Amino acid sequence: MAFAKQACNITKMRDFGSLIALAAANAEVGNHAQALIAAKKALPFSPPSRKQWTIDFIARRQKQVPERDVPSTEKNKQ
Image (cartoon, rainbow, N blue to C red; front, top):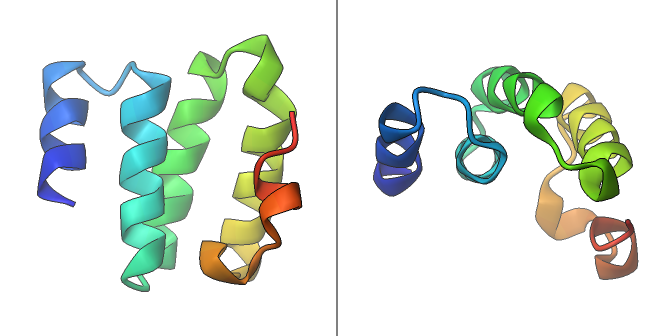
Protein backbone atom coordinates (compact mmCIF):
# COMPACT_ATOMS: atom_id res chain seq x y z
CA MET A 1 0.00 0.00 0.00
CA ALA A 2 2.91 2.35 0.64
CA PHE A 3 3.91 2.35 -3.02
CA ALA A 4 0.33 3.05 -4.13
CA LYS A 5 0.10 5.97 -1.68
CA GLN A 6 3.43 7.30 -2.90
CA ALA A 7 2.31 7.05 -6.54
CA CYS A 8 -0.89 8.92 -5.71
CA ASN A 9 1.08 11.65 -3.96
CA ILE A 10 3.51 11.99 -6.86
CA THR A 11 0.65 12.22 -9.38
CA LYS A 12 -1.38 14.53 -7.11
CA MET A 13 -4.26 12.03 -7.07
CA ARG A 14 -4.84 12.47 -10.82
CA ASP A 15 -3.63 9.15 -12.22
CA PHE A 16 -6.08 6.33 -12.87
CA GLY A 17 -3.57 3.51 -12.36
CA SER A 18 -2.24 4.91 -9.11
CA LEU A 19 -5.70 5.51 -7.68
CA ILE A 20 -6.96 2.06 -8.65
CA ALA A 21 -3.83 0.49 -7.17
CA LEU A 22 -4.53 2.36 -3.93
CA ALA A 23 -8.17 1.26 -4.01
CA ALA A 24 -7.20 -2.36 -4.58
CA ALA A 25 -4.57 -2.28 -1.83
CA ASN A 26 -7.08 -0.85 0.62
CA ALA A 27 -9.71 -3.40 -0.36
CA GLU A 28 -7.27 -6.26 0.06
CA VAL A 29 -6.62 -5.36 3.70
CA GLY A 30 -10.30 -4.70 4.44
CA ASN A 31 -10.28 -0.88 4.30
CA HIS A 32 -13.40 -0.82 2.14
CA ALA A 33 -14.32 2.79 2.88
CA GLN A 34 -10.87 4.01 1.81
CA ALA A 35 -10.96 1.70 -1.22
CA LEU A 36 -14.28 3.22 -2.27
CA ILE A 37 -12.94 6.76 -1.90
CA ALA A 38 -9.90 5.99 -4.07
CA ALA A 39 -11.98 4.16 -6.69
CA LYS A 40 -14.42 7.08 -6.97
CA LYS A 41 -11.50 9.48 -7.38
CA ALA A 42 -10.16 7.25 -10.17
CA LEU A 43 -13.40 7.27 -12.20
CA PRO A 44 -12.92 10.68 -13.89
CA PHE A 45 -9.42 9.62 -14.97
CA SER A 46 -10.37 6.19 -16.29
CA PRO A 47 -9.71 5.64 -19.98
CA PRO A 48 -12.83 4.96 -22.04
CA SER A 49 -11.91 1.29 -22.35
CA ARG A 50 -11.83 0.95 -18.53
CA LYS A 51 -14.81 3.15 -17.61
CA GLN A 52 -17.30 0.29 -17.16
CA TRP A 53 -14.72 -1.81 -15.35
CA THR A 54 -14.18 1.09 -12.93
CA ILE A 55 -17.93 1.45 -12.35
CA ASP A 56 -18.12 -2.29 -11.62
CA PHE A 57 -15.11 -2.02 -9.30
CA ILE A 58 -16.87 0.77 -7.37
CA ALA A 59 -20.02 -1.36 -7.11
CA ARG A 60 -17.96 -4.23 -5.67
CA ARG A 61 -16.35 -1.85 -3.18
CA GLN A 62 -19.80 -0.66 -2.07
CA LYS A 63 -20.78 -4.30 -1.45
CA GLN A 64 -17.38 -4.97 0.16
CA VAL A 65 -16.73 -7.93 -2.16
CA PRO A 66 -13.02 -8.83 -2.09
CA GLU A 67 -11.44 -8.81 -5.53
CA ARG A 68 -10.11 -12.32 -4.95
CA ASP A 69 -13.76 -13.52 -4.80
CA VAL A 70 -14.61 -12.06 -8.21
CA PRO A 71 -14.22 -14.44 -11.17
CA SER A 72 -11.23 -13.42 -13.30
CA THR A 73 -13.46 -13.08 -16.37
CA GLU A 74 -15.47 -10.39 -14.62
CA LYS A 75 -12.36 -8.55 -13.34
CA ASN A 76 -10.82 -8.42 -16.82
CA LYS A 77 -13.96 -7.33 -18.69
CA GLN A 78 -13.53 -4.24 -20.77
